[in-house]
Length: 421
Ligand code: BGC
Image (tube, rainbow, N blue to C red; front, side, top):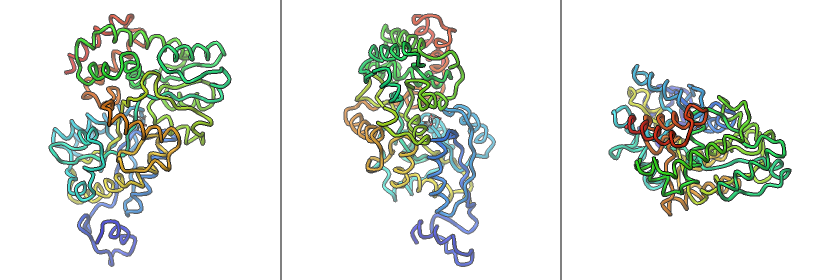
């Protein structure tokens, strides 16, 4: 019997159920899912997966650990895994998944991957994190990218702004908003948000090759170069355009400032789009999406994966059910339309997506073909977590005055990264 048909049959009485190859009578019919999708847009997107899992006859046990960027969730996950009590699956970002795979904590769901042909539809860049030694231990639900800006269209019209094409034009636009009495830049002053914005600043200041050299190759010359200094100078420039209450603000509250027209723009990964969608705002009509000025043509990505840990036999059917629905093309389309991201499968049509989503899908394709598709350092796709954390520390100290100059910032960055290696 096909997996889907068998799962539908579970709706019948227990006596008549016949079990297929993926499940047995004693299976735990529950998916426990650890994640940090607690904002309005995120929760709405997750609902697509919950519904799909329910259709397969599995109950949903939500294990939310709030905190954008996933830092708190990763701490909880670590404790659960160490205690021998991993969830069915956990939302996870690249290098975290690799570390668990390398320490032998992940399950092997390769037989399902083989049966459903994931090798052919998931970009190689993502497979590097979902697969270790040829074995699938995680599945990607999406591709996000950090190099986006999100603008309130009415405010843009009010101040007579046009799309900024480079960093200087971006600063000029922010200045225009400031003069018009609008908060120019909606930012949440939390380390992961500041580092996420800095990824884009570095890519814009130095170009894609520089980003790669510095953050992917960790070339020391690039890390302490004048271009990196200039990137910190540019970060300091943007700091002049945030409101006084930005410290500690959650990312989705910053998005809400743009949605309401209290601020002109947010620099944020395309999960911000999920908040516009949840507020029933329309791309191109209520808000505008542009690539971070000076980075169009490149995609600095992260992908939300679901990692499957080694669990007793009676919990494996739940893992396979979740993996299968996650990789279903219809689920990938429906989820990503709401989430703001792009499907992780290259064979999903862009028909259901709005103009920003269509651009996102096209950009991934182009960047992949051109070799300008790079993992975000802030989002754990360029380096292991220890290095990303070292990066957060330096960027946030600089942002909040603990590091006074760009010269000191680059010295501290090299020091912190070397210590974390
Ligand atoms: C995740 C997104 C999430 C965002 C904010 C990112 O690390 O990839 O899915 O929406 O954090 O919570």
